[in-house]
Image 1 (spheres, rainbow, N blue to C red):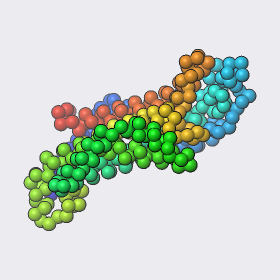
Image 2 (tube, rainbow, N blue to C red):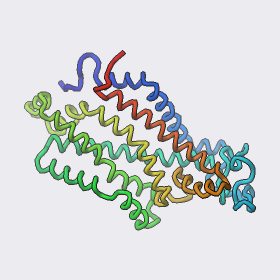
Image 3 (spheres, rainbow, N blue to C red):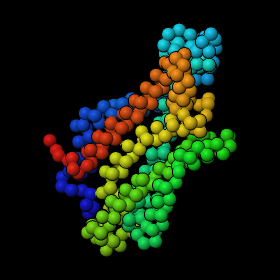
Length: 309
């Protein structure tokens, strides 16, 4: 029997109970759930608003102010709930909710890929050891020492524009993103490989895959969940930063990072400071929600903080 079950209540269930009792984690979970719902039904919300993210409303711009939106609060009105985008007049509500959908999609897919790859590589390196572990260690050292940001920017410029940029972001972020989790899991799995329950599984002829998935993985679920939860806000920020630098998702696909990048000049000149507020607030809420939830999960699985009330 795997040592992942201890007593009447497993450590994982105990940790989940602590998460439910953590006020910050509950707030984070509510924010995350709300943002996921918004992203999931974003096309419906855009349709309900009566607008879209592609139509230009030039008549709502003020040429005397450099084609900034007419009216107060960036052109907020009953038709345009978040106002309009300067220069184009596109509906900012549509851009923000669809931009959130883009950011969350990329972050969640990258997190899923890096979590699976990092976990399997880390556990297998610890279990098999030898030359395989040595190769994995050198590969991790290479990835940690590689100038990732410069490479991402250069790759975004070199790759032909017809290649989908959202797919390029997922591929590049995934290639570099699994290394941190793999090193953490490898180090923790090494302490488990020599334990009695692993030796017992080997002695009865269990395959390496069986030992990895049935014996080692359940005992490493805590750190895997912690890293995965905390990775999502990091990837949301990475996608926004790359879009900010001009090598992310290209227009006309909505992107929170690109909207924030475009808004800087308007904030600096004071022509339309409201352009930054709505995409910036949506990005802030997304990062805050996942960070609060991730911190709660981390504290719940931290053995130094484990205490049941």
